[in-house]
Figure 1 (cartoon, rainbow, N blue to C red):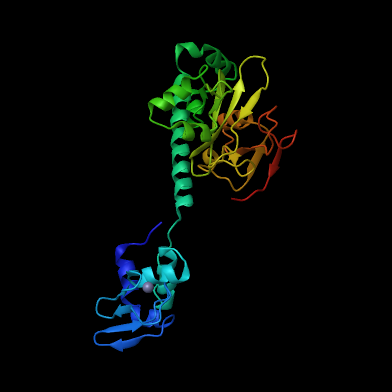
Figure 2: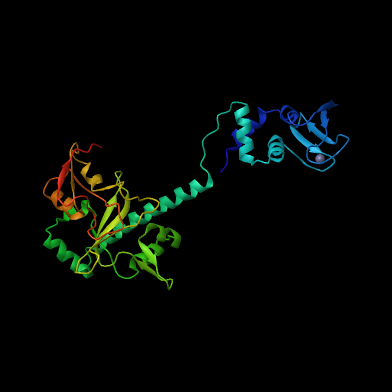
Length: 302
Ligand SMILES: [Zn+2]
């Protein structure tokens, strides 16, 4: 976290060091400099000097010295940034808002997770068309999903064991970022395993169309039928509607809220595009997404 050199200079120039130090130390002029009793060591005769020309202070007794910011950090026990803020306020300088390091690190992690999700959605989607994805292709045929539908919802097929993990590593993503995405888990033996294996994949997007999570449906009788992404830096359950990014391309004055991903997708294919599914706010992923057993209309406005 830091301010630009220009703004720091401006703050320094508008706060005369003699004025500032005089608030803490009784200064007397002697020649070109001011002298006083050093506030940083114990003394009886003044060896603490302040130069108005150079805008610096120096103690000939204990050797402490610096500019107006140094003085404030030492006398008040505050950070450099806090000293800049205090003096800017004193001289009515508006500082730009800057993010602290914690926020910046979080923003960087979020950006990585968005990239991981985007890559993964493409990866799974391309997978769907490969010869080894026969089980998914048969399911799609049975559900009569058109290629256009597969494209607009970017439906995909997840691979085996750690295929996604390896692909993400190859893209240069770090373990920490990959684990944060929730797309890969680490087991007790320290092995990385894809969260979704052999599942039909539904990328979940925010209203801006960024992939924030995934839902995965099994294609055999194994349980659970659906699994969803855990919450992470870019995804919080209950705050998103599946399909809204696609629905909003049409008229959404009225939104139809349905039970699951496949309901949204099949209605969409029949021309009913103002349809979304609520993403369940629970860890129980038995039936994927659901709010009510029966379908109903809502007048939700966006
Ligand atoms: Zn001193």
